[in-house]
Every structure is written in C-alpha cells, then in structure tokens.
Image (tube, rainbow, N blue to C red):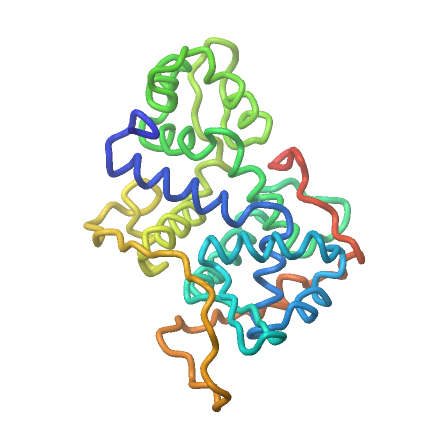
Length: 282
C-alpha cells in the first residue's frame, strides 16, 4: 500500500528515509553510536561513555540498535559480550557532519556555542515531525502548492484538512513558508537547503555510496541512479575460539573528522534533550 500519493519510486524513497530517521533520532541513539565509534566495547564500557543513562535505560537502547542492524552484539564467552558498529554504521557516520553543516548555517544561533552532537539532535527532531519527509519531498518537486493539493500527495485517502497541523508545525520550524492563510506553501531557504542532508540519508538508506547524494533525482542533480540495494539486520553471533581478531574488511574509509569533533564544546554531565521546537527560530 502506498505511503504517499507520489510516484512509486519517490514514495519508496520517502519511506526509506522516514524509516532511517525513526532508527537514529530516538533520544541518545546517536550518542551511543558515537560512543562505539572507537571499536567494540563491553556493556560497562559503553555505560561509562554515556553516564547520563541508567543501566536500565541503556540495555533496551542497545537492543533496539541491534534489532535495527546498526549495532552488533558479539558473545565471546558466557560473561564476555561486546557491542560494536556494523558496516551500516560505518557508512552512516559521514552523514553526521552534513547535518552539522546544515544546522550551523540555518538553525537560529543559540546564546552559547553548541556541541555538534546537539546540532545533530536538534536537526533530527525537525526532520521527524509527523509527515515532514513527505511534505518536504512534495514541495521540492511541485514548488508552491496549496494545502488541498498537498494533502492529495501527502495524505491520499484522508480528509484534506488533516494536512494543516503538520504544515503549521513545519512553518513554525522555519522549513516551510507561506504568504498567509489560503495562500500556497513552499520550502523556505532552510527547507530547500536540506538537499545535501536528505540526499545523503536517501543514498545511505538505499545502500548506495554517499557520493550518490549529489545525483538524487529530487534533492540533487538528476541523473541515472543505481538500483537500491537491500540489507538485513545483523543477528547476535558467537565469537570464534580465542585467536587474534582478523582485520575488518568491507568497511568504508573512516571520515576525515574524528568522533570527538562532534563534542567540540564542553557538554554538561547530563546533556540536554533535543529541543522540542528547534529550527531557524530555535
């Protein structure tokens, strides 16, 4: 069943990006993934890197990331278990600086310098607003569009007035703008500037190299795109008998930036949650 009223390929693209955002946006998920970027860690070691999470909170977070195929749980012995990145996360990490770049350019400047991790969390909060991806895709494709027509693409089969609450939220966030009641809607400069971010998330979710973002048919320069590749979640594995660990293969090259760069400013002992209504007017 169609997710939107957009063409099938575009509909599938929006659905993949929406699912990706649902995996990485929940509170603390990006911080946990960054904590694991230095290599596999035991549970207590992960907990030490995210001290604001209580033990009862960390375990379900790790389990959900394992279920999503982003973290690999490896059993070395009955009392020796480690958690580490899957190859999928190695290719996801370079997307994070793209998000930071957009946030630094378009989000309202705070009173104090924010660490990059908070910029990422604030940006992801905006992108996971209800129907945000479908609305942004539709406005990018169609340009100025009235509310009723927009509802036909974003919420096919639903009463057209239901488009207005998510639209008003995106207007308040500064990603969409309108000249007034009854006037068409269009992407703001900040919304249109999301091209590199959404193109990169689209490429990653389709199993394509991030370089493909520039050729995204909606958010980049249209070009023939390779067919999407599928992937499945990794299941827990038993570790082999104690032998020197083989070199990892098939991993993408690490990004030029270091994971510590995402914490470039001092963070409080218990980080603030992502802003409930960030955006250009944060």
